[in-house]
Length: 551
Image (cartoon, rainbow, N blue to C red; front, side):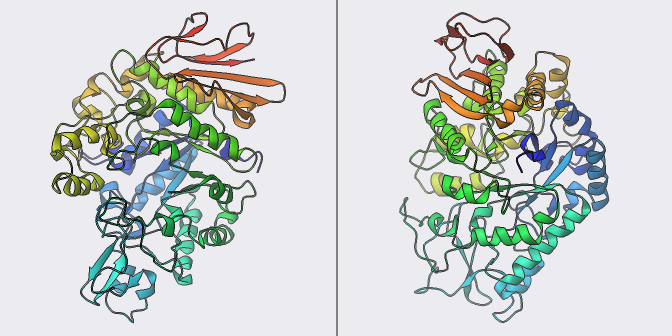
């Protein structure tokens, strides 16, 4: 376990709908991915994580699955998948599939049977409850706004959906459901996939008392204490490990909403009984407004650092970290943590990349991050497609809680659609993503920010990421070194050391657009491994400057 291949790997996430369209229908597809594998290989990553490509009615962009062993028709065929996987393996790239088994689509065969009658053999595959006083069984709210319960007139009972009402939660208390899931996972492993990213896996075990949650907003109760890290979640994952994961050489990461450090030590313990690592969201939740994530407030680096350092320190020697700034559920990294204006976009994109990639853990790069893609800054609610946005608009704007203009400002900062605009390949129409009409508008800045331009410029963000990845493969201290936080009272600089034997790696990143005093490099001798500036100034860090020195 101490030398597991996934510890030194770097993972590249593809959101298939927005990556590359090979047939001109405006939707990215598997053949589009296959056509761009050489680009991904040139970046230097080892693993591709693919957001869901299974058959789905697309209520939540593929996270509502109607057939776990079929490919979404818009994305291609199983033959296209097999060819893509073969081409990945030829290039030494591994494939991680998105595993979405907290819930299925309501159009899955299991659910269509389940809702037919109370005595249907599939009834217990899902969570059904009788009305309580003529209303929902409890006050839980859905993660996508509204109630987490949907009344089904056919049998006059409610079913649980912690997300969209078209995403009924599977009943993991049912041993047959677990067997169905494990059999399906085995089928994909036999096909040759190399691992799983497990969607909201911390929510598969529900507290069977189904108590009301605290109603923070006066509308619905918070189900988190009863559905996140539930009573049997570790038992279920250990069973999954025994029945499936331990039989193959896989990389596994669990998306763990509500995870604490103590829970993470169980999920991702180096004893290998459950998963290799988890995604935690604590560093993403350092800014919360009156209406939760819907705020224009910027992240304050000291708060961010406190969370990141805590996870680095407390998992040391016990469990493994996932490192990420953005993904399909988060806004663009350079817009959120750096400065996406023309003067500092590239230099700040390199700075935040340095800060993350020198930490201990497995780094994740989200498509377009490596060329410094930015938030979309759409001007109208009509430009947005994400179900989370549209539901929140109904609840907050049409419900009279927020002005439309204020809500749109929030969307510009934090909407998930910021990350889902099509990949910017070149400066041709629609950024080279499609010859048709793209399913979601292309970011207007694609003429300046695109992969073709990045590949032609040796000082681009792309080649900086490439160098960071090469360094990780060249220096054991970056993979195995102990993390030691520095300057932890500084409001501007994120600094730390990594230590392994007699090696010390010194990292300092200026998160501001100002020159700030920094004496960390005064009088030290060593080799500068990477920096986003060619020349340095004694005793200061330039705006968004990052330096890494091996002492």
